Image (cartoon, rainbow over all chains, first blue to last red; front, top):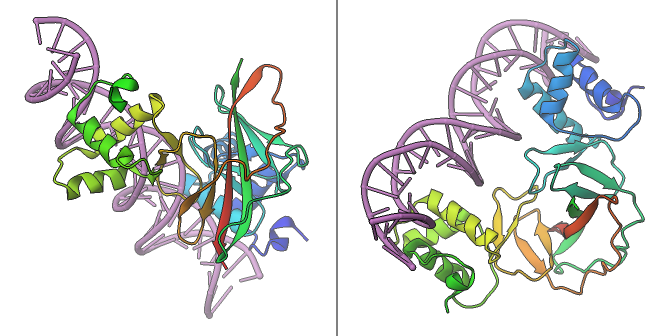
Length: 130
Length: 130
DNA sequence: GTGTTTGCAAAGTGTTTGCAATTTA
DNA sequence: TAAATTGCAAACACTTTGCAAACAC
């Protein structure tokens, strides 16, 4: 069963091509829509940028990707690492790096009001070149 | 000595009006450029939206405001609370709430690579209505 | 066959910029 | 008066949308 089927997504060429770029080797990536689009073009795949955006959005809905946007990032990055984890954002280079789970001692989160519940928590540590 | 002088900013009408909206009562706020613009208009002050953006940007440079942008926020919010603190972001309402300093047990941050140093760290806890 | 997805271009949104006119110090 | 700031409109960059054609199942 393919990843796409598993995620409940119909198998189409654009989705296959994009999934191949994202999940080919099991490595975790942070990619923007533009980057994916660029890689598709380099390999001769003609897929509209709008389709890349839409496809990535559907991958997010389907739980295959995690969107990250933060001040200092020009565009939304899509993270293939779905495990809860946090990020370093290097302000000098714009580079986003995973912080392995467990390295952030965040075991006791404050409680929101009684009428709401915690969905997720995201820590971004901004760094700069020394 | 006025806040603007203190921040090393030349005193101009637009800056005074905007500072008045932001810092009038010493309360902390999260405001967007549009909101400030709206308040200016309500009180008959004719200041261009672009000027509001530019002015808020200069307030940030001068250390009077802290910009916050996160997925789920349509626009950048400017926080008058310059003390290190974190936020709840209610995904249902879009509302951003301060988490008082000390309520997040974040005393041991992971270290970035040797060639970079930590500038700041920002935690956003996403919540939703129960 | 039928409902979904794509491609494309166009619209949308938040934000920045260029430059002449104005204001500040 | 010299330098900084404003206003305005136009430019910008990222992202979404509308709709007809193509495709998956």
